[in-house]
Image 1 (tube, rainbow, N blue to C red):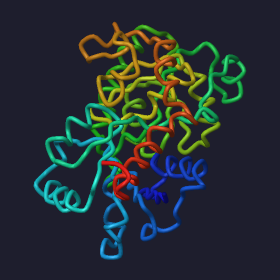
Image 2: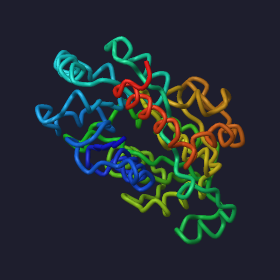
Image 3: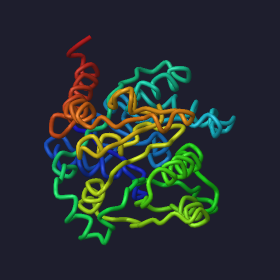
Image 4: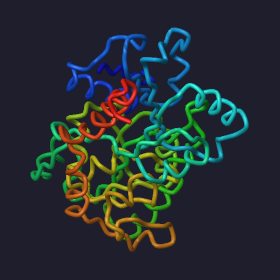
Length: 315
């Protein structure tokens, strides 16, 4: 069995997944999308990078990962493109039950539901938070709230990316700022213009690292008092499982993987935000099941079933 993985190549998390998968599956890795048994599109919009006329459909089965759908952006053109793509795809993968519910209304193709793995060699708890804060010039006595993502639309670098909930994040931080005398925000990731502008308008201090290495991001998680996921739509986000593995206190809106990883008391709506409580041990226990290398196994098994079925070895 040979598997070819294709990612957007836009410095996004899917590119990391491709690298991690390939590094750990040399024995089944294919170097060409036109010479493989499984063609895995790590994001469904990658489909237009492939010349489907060159694919031997009697051999190659196409699996597309769909992370989530934003209803407000899923217009007639999106539906038309989906139908074209759906005619070419054999199987779908989704990282959470919520996305499965979304796409099951759009396709009759089989859907494999499985969270992406989380790399246990990268994401680790560090107990010496005091020295970590000194290393990154973060005030030791500050109440530090984290957000590592994109929050601004790429077309203008001004408008909020509303599915990520940056406006809700600002509302949460504003409430916390009334309770904590020395609150500061730690931001990482590119396209943070919206949140930075709003924090400056509110006079809330922040630290910002645009594109830190994974080792640095792991350190930054371990500096936090609280991580907030305020999204309206998500497939993960991967920050949930990274926080869980680093034992970073996290609360989240009920999106993506939140209800599958976090304790119910850690999930909030805006009208009860201040009542949410992190439960790091609960989240850590849940995420251990998808930590590498075991986190790869459900994908390998899924691909083997597709391969064997196509070969006629199983019904």
